[in-house]
Image (tube, rainbow, N blue to C red; front, side, top):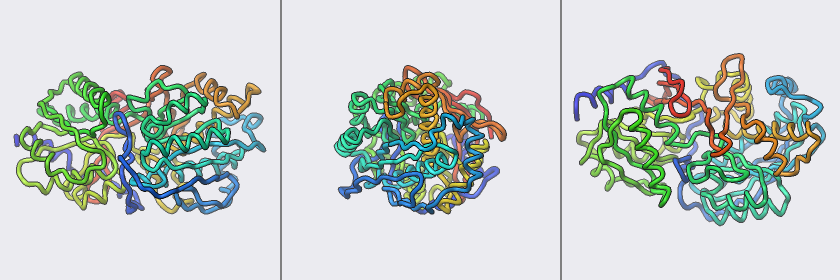
Amino acid sequence: MSTESDDLRRILTAPSNRRQLLRGMTITGAGLAFGGSILAACGGSDDDAGSTDTSSGTDETSGSGAPTSGGEPPSDVGAQLAELLGVDAANAGAGLTWELGSVLALTGPGSFYGKTMTNGTNLAVKHIKAAGGPDINVTTLDHKSGDAQAGVDAMRDLIAKGVPAKLASYVDDLGAMLPQTAQSKMFTLDGGGGTSIFGQGQPYFYGTRAITPNDALPGALKYLAETMPEAKSLGYIVWDLGEPTNTQIKDDLLAKAEAEGFEFNGLYETYPVGASDYSTLIPKIKANLPDVLIAYGSGQDPGHFSSQWYTSGGDLCPFIGFELTPDGVNAAKGAYDEYGFTFAADYFDENVGVNPLAKLFLSEFRAEYGEEPDFYAANFYENTLAMWDVIRRVLAKGGDINSGEELDAAFQEDLSAASVYGGDESTVGRYEIDPVTHSVIRRPMGIFQQKDGEITPLAYFDINGDDFRLA
């Protein structure tokens, strides 16, 4: 390996201003992943999770088995939230009951994600009630970690129940739910995977997080250009998501890398979602080492790859991943901590969550669940608040909050919402969605590293690497 690559590896593994890794990262699960196109690990458990109705005033446990402390949050939490969001009490929805669907991975390899997403949703439901909003009954159904038929069945149940809106993951269950979402006019926010590429522009469906790795790659490459300008060639390993998705992802990644001044060294290998054995992939990489390897995968996959990559021997180049999750940490078997794992994503922790809404969310999540929230919990917390924002818009016009069509129209009037990301110590952050693609066009991201049990922010940026700055 070249001297430049040796230098780059030292950069990517150097500790700097670290903080302790999020507490509670011992829960295992398998990769939801939010990929450049289809999210989620393939397959799933045959266990039946059924559905669970939860409301803001109950002590019920969520459908994912996530514990709740029960009862109402302190009254000052509601007052704080109402002030931060600029809530008009006359249109807040107090005394009303509203039905919300949520279709998540409650069983199967992505069950960890269903749990943390449900925790974020349930906390927001409580806070909305405390802030003078409606009682929100959440019907949580299971798509079994990417099982298309399970998603179709869940949609059938929600439609029969007359649910006007839902929270989603796995890009509406690998796209299988998108036709029913449009036909039923069910207003939908996907904070688990965004729109991906194949889900862009779908009616009634909006992705509220960055497309990964596509949206994160430019910022990651700006970081490399700043810290190791000698590194020019890139190789890629990415999930095999089938055609035409594979080609769409490849073309977009290569174009974005070229725009940042990087060369493609010819290495572009796909591997199965949920793979745990990389014995055939690693020799292909070693036979054509780039200066930097772009390694797209999610859930346990990056951990398995990292463990085998660093124990395979021979000359290795550094690599950049795109998601850190507890199950990935476990799958790495200590490789993340020993060698370092550098990843680019719209990641949430206390270094990112500095705005007043983020601080409220962090403190209340810790009090409610006794652990640190991950970015999926953060995303579903803010998406549930976004649902309330849309409800208030409809009520202000004297409309029907049980009409998905009216909810969608109200959202399209201002395609932005309050966020726990971005902002500053006195200003609540906001994300913004493109009216054509229905993907985020403003979403704070960064490049981070885990090493020695700690996470270090290395740089911050927005979509397409805008507003890039070193941490």
